[in-house]
Amino acid sequence: MSAESAAKSGIQWSIEADGHRAVLVEVGGTLRSYSVDGVDILDGFGTGEISPGSAGQILAPWPNRIRDGQYEFEGQAYQLALTEPPRRTAIHGLVNWSRWRLAEQTPASVTLEYELPGQVGYPWSLLLRSRWTVSADGLRCDQEVINTSDANAPWGYSVHPYLRLPGVSVEDTVLHVPARSRIQADARLLPIGATKIAGTEFDFSEARRIGDLVLDTTFGDIDFDADGITTVTLADPGAGRPIVVWADEKFRYWQVFTADTLHGERFRRSIAVEPMTCPPDAYRTGRDLTVLEPGSTWAASWGVRY
Image (cartoon, rainbow, N blue to C red; front, side):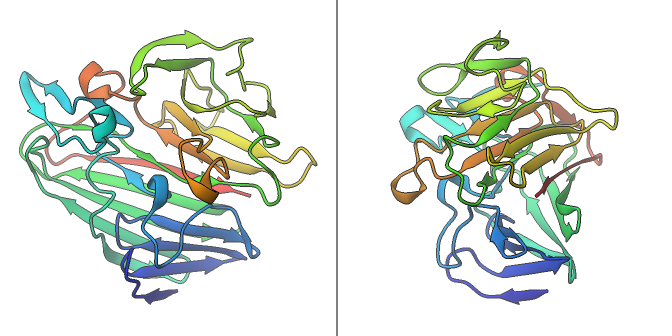
């Protein structure tokens, strides 16, 4: 394992085993790159760049968006900073631009930690710990969070990896999402309802090409296997090796984004596959929102196979 300094994203920690290599960075505890046998699977970013389009970031203590940054929790009203001003939303949590610290390291794994202080709009303190591992089984992230405050705290979690199959365009990628519904969104990409997707253009319960479909879509009513694992697959129509993103039973939603709002060379170049524990605006709706009791520990796992 190596660590080196970089101007934009801080210290870089590389981990490697069995032909799998990943790089994690200090700013955001972000996954900057992941390759298998020298083939880049993650559409990451360079050491001299900041994460574009939330690439590889951890999204906590909420994923996606909160309408107007306003919510109520246990009878108290809160106002968050509007971090997406054009849509007047608070987006992707509070930890993705903070400096994480090294807790443990081995050649094939690294554990990063961040202490989130209580603040205006989110007055609870949390300790987040991410353990990243590479092996012949792929990339794995084991996430923990401890509520270090003296009151119940709202919690949601996601990650934002962009993935791409070597030599395969977004249009030609064969997508499988084990879901039966999707959340309908307004012009601000905030939820206004849910609808079944069987037989519609958003139905990827049977694997098929994405084609020219634009996706920035939250899928719900997802299926799990007998071991409590849900998987999204990106496949090569030429029968090459697929990319599989997996997540455990704590994740009730998948967000799939075809990067149509990114600019320049990143426009529609890769696909973000995001396992989410709760849907957008969960702080307002309460839907699948986790409540962390004081001193309690929450844990979940997800990963990528190629």
